[in-house]
Image (tube, rainbow, N blue to C red; front, side, top):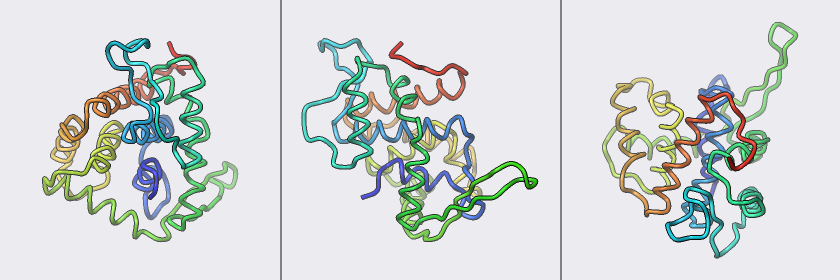
Length: 224
């Protein structure tokens, strides 16, 4: 199974131009948010619960199976070896070089190809146009059912919607649909009762952290 962050990156790359549909400030942070949500869905890393010996809202690595995927395993190690940090601090740490690693994974999987060039013959540029869109089409089909047809999403699809909603990208995936309706439905799903309490708190924390990181020009270097 692909990572939530890989699926999100595929959706956020324009199939034809190969360029991201969100800006360079929000892209790495929403991808890092996807890593955190993946860990929350697996009950690996979640915000502290009342009564725990950790400040409210800080992230806690739970006892249980260590993720097999090396990217997720490194994320858990990064979070677990630091003092308990806020989600926004974790997002800043996880975001470093994350897009490049995820791009390599989806290129190696054959979903996109990497094309390097120069703008005006001077400025280097890279794009990742689609090669095999079968996986992305399956993702879009699930998203369409949830966002356009009102079908109840699976927790994983709902997590994707919540991430897309955090960077206002859901309407961009369905340009022929009513933008306001898609945006409203995406927000409803993001705020909906589709996950347990721990994951619900993680969704709220991750989305808030992405919004703050993308709108406040301050790099969160520590746990705050």
